[in-house]
Length: 145
Image 1: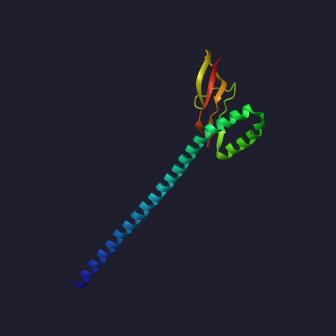
Image 2: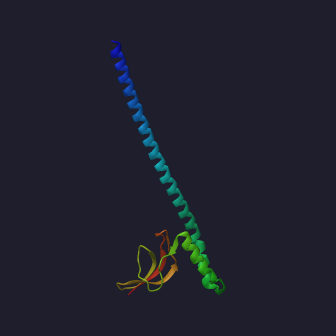
Image 3: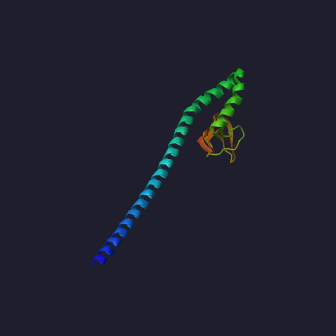
């Protein structure tokens, strides 16, 4: 009888160890999933913060570009501004006169003509890419030929 009790206790202990081991493994897996989720949230928050900051800077960039066009003595700023934009991950969307209109990159505020081919006749506000994504489309006038 004593042998049976010891075997039962041994089996119960083994079952308890197996149950606690499974609990520990589940807890570790839950913690690892939680840690990964927090990392994803941190990266998302950092990206959203950078995006919001860059969006607030765009009107200032527009003002600086208008000032450079108006006052020749500010021309040296163009190179510095271009270099800084590149370092920040900002790039201008091509919207020069004669460029092909692309609705994914340009907002047409005025369309003139009746033709099939749409080209940009004037850029009213430059557009920007931020880290290879369209941050703000260029505001343009379009000519249909």
